[in-house]
Length: 282
Ligand SMILES: Nc1ncnc2c1ncn2[C@@H]1O[C@H](COP(=O)(O)OP(=O)(O)OP(=O)(O)O)[C@@H](O)[C@H]1O
Ligand SMILES: [Mg+2]
Image (cartoon, rainbow, N blue to C red; front, side):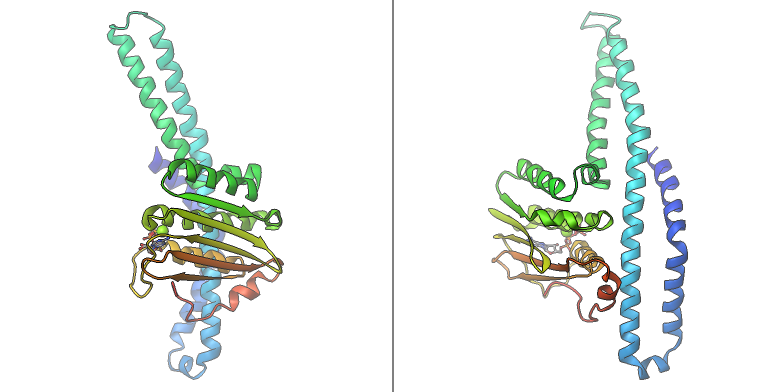
């Protein structure tokens, strides 16, 4: 069933973005083929290549989010309905006998319990694939709920969220980036920081600014790390036309600072100005 969902979801979304991705790949291939000439025009070409890569990264983010949304809908409609039907049948089988020792009743109870557990897993997967509340409640309320749920499940550490209501100005198609940035920051804190206090501060001044900080273990940014969470946060910042800085020392917590403009019309221009050496935790 999941294989089926996955195989049906991806091609349509990928196909929709295929021409743009193909153009970008062709541009990259041309740039690579240029070889020695490339070296002579290095600064301009580096800028072009970086801009192209930034655009490609933004596109891939969009494809990924769109696939996630599609998968979430399929899971919700197909799997959700099937599980509800199984629970209803199990319940009606249970009603056939009131003898708790009856194998029929015990079997039906087990089927009902398994279906309920699976429903819980599906709900959890849905939340990860596509935060439906982001669509329903908007960015600010969805973030408040995320932090509330995070606090419920991470009792040793308290997270405080302060979010300026102006964040509602972020266009709907870009809100997912802000949501995922905060989500990844909190996931990392839960996984690695062993912190007592976390703070997500979201301010609206001339620019938007997000601070995600904790008072935990920190890490040594000189060590290369296999994960892609911080890289993806950085790519999402670029999609917002902004930039991200990570300040940390082993034993002294982590402070992630993200800035992006409140005017979104010039997003591509900002994304095109990504610096070549902007490549990881500093
Ligand atoms: N708040 C934090 N406290 C301590 N260490 C952190 C924190 N955030 C990140 N790190 C360190 O930085 C590394 C890189 O984080 P990143 O999110 O890029 O990857 P990951 O979490 O390991 O994997 P992924 O996000 O791809 O599942 C982590 O493995 C962890 O060692
Ligand atoms: Mg991570």
